[in-house]
Length: 105
Image (cartoon, rainbow, N blue to C red; front, side):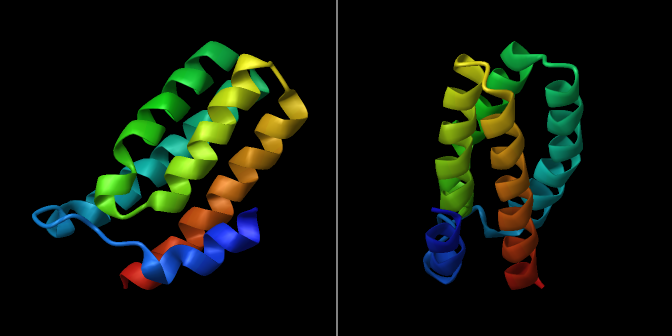
């Protein structure tokens, strides 16, 4: 799944009027990624699920379609309290953000 998501990055489009905010959106998600790792380490599934839900809801307008997909999966991982799956998903999100960041410069 992650390879397909990464391959689709060039096709992701930001909605008109939001382009100037993409850099800030990207930076904020990277900051929150470290918070996600802490939440997982503490097994705080509810807060982690809530953040994933938030990301799921607002990623696509900014052209982060892959982040929406991964966040939806992370939300499910948290609902089932699957530490291994949530940990893997967070690393996939990190990989996605790194790849997406390379297209923003």
